Image (tube, rainbow, N blue to C red; front, side, top):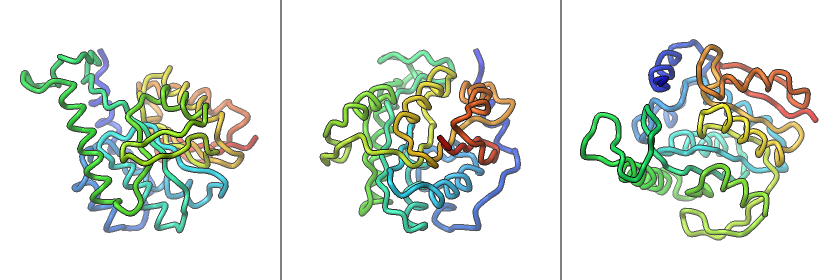
Length: 245
């Protein structure tokens, strides 16, 4: 069994372009659960995408965890005077290194904390973080797998988000951050679902797509680099692409 957490740590030292010092972003890593889940190069890529994305869409984040990247995106939207809505989803399922999630499984290194209770803890952390850091600009968040989220997105239905607000899904997408299940199959499927709604000149960023990683999202980059409908924008060290057709 591949230890993906060890792989992630092993690539965390790779040099990357960074944004100018931002006090709020610096604080996020200590304020929000999941400090080690966001590569230092991602804020630069997210900022670039938000600055240059088309005006006729929204932002979608696949995978929310404790809310670190969500708060980062909301902060950079505001900093760049963008008013686009942010939609995101997460199933909050914790399977651990061995990916053996069941209702009664225990988290790594513990014989008292179940995977299901840890998942609920992370979801509650996410909601508390959003209400504390982004009370006036909450994202439209959903406790759903990406498959279930996009199924509803395709139907353009009106549903309640985690914060009990009614919102209609199905807006065109200007930027998508794919950071969900990192298997090859899910990375590809998440991209295919995003692609259906991504507008021309829109951007898509793949987390953990670093060259040499054994994550499925990294393996999928071989296909993305051959996709004639997309232009490679940057590798920092994760991959950012722009839709050109």
